[in-house]
Amino acid sequence: MSAKEFLDRIKTMDLEIDNQQAELDRLEALASRITSDTMPVAVLEMRKEINDKIDELVNLKREARAKIEQLKNPKHRIVLGYYYLCNMTMEQVADRTGRDLRSIYRLRDRVLDNLCGWGNDYDK
Image 1: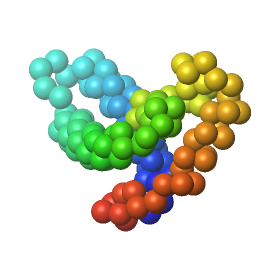
Image 2: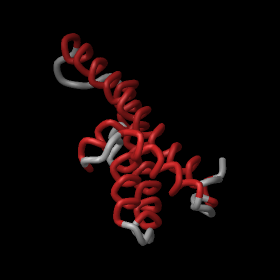
Image 3: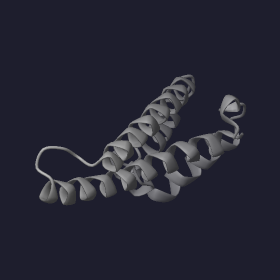
C-alpha cells in the first residue's frame, strides 16, 4: 500500500465515522422521543460499531503520525498532518499555513511521491 493510499484510507474512514455519527445522533433523538428510559438495542449496537471504528482510526492515525513526524521538513509534516490527521480541506491547510492552494497541492503530491512502505500491515 502506498503512502497516499494509506493516508487516504485514514481520511475516508474519518469521513465515514462522521457520517455514521450524524446518523446515530438522529436515531438517538428519534428514540428518545419514543422511549424514555432505555435506548433500543439496535442503536446501542450502532454506537458500539462506531466506537470500534474510532479505535481503528486512532490506531491508524497513531501509525501515520509516527511516520509523518520522521519527515525532516517541518512544512511537509504540517501539511500532511493538517490534511490527513486533522481532516482539514486543502483550502483550510492553505489558509492555516499562509500558502496558496496550488503550492499546498504540489507540496503534498511531491512528498507523497517520495514516500514508500507506509501501512504495509494494513493491506486489506
